[in-house]
Structure formats: structure tokens, C-alpha cells
Image (tube, rainbow, N blue to C red; front, side, top):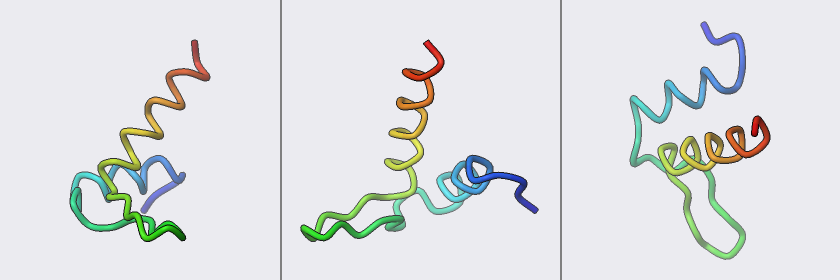
Length: 48
């Protein structure tokens, strides 16, 4: 069981890296791996 969104995202990125996580209004798709990578970049930026 997941206790937070980050755990869910990390698990999803590991299990389904190429599966679409987000469909953007312009038709662009973002995979779970790409979403996790971007979330990690944002988290690192905030922590610094």
C-alpha cells in the first residue's frame, strides 16, 4: 500500500515505464517514467 503520491509514481514508473500517465489537451502523452523524471527534477530544484 502506498502512503504518498511519490511512492505511487515511483512504483508505476518501475512497473509501467512506457504506459501513458497523462494525456495533454494538445494531444501530447507523458509516460510514467517521464513524469517521474520530471517530478524528481522539480523536487531537486526545490530542495536546493
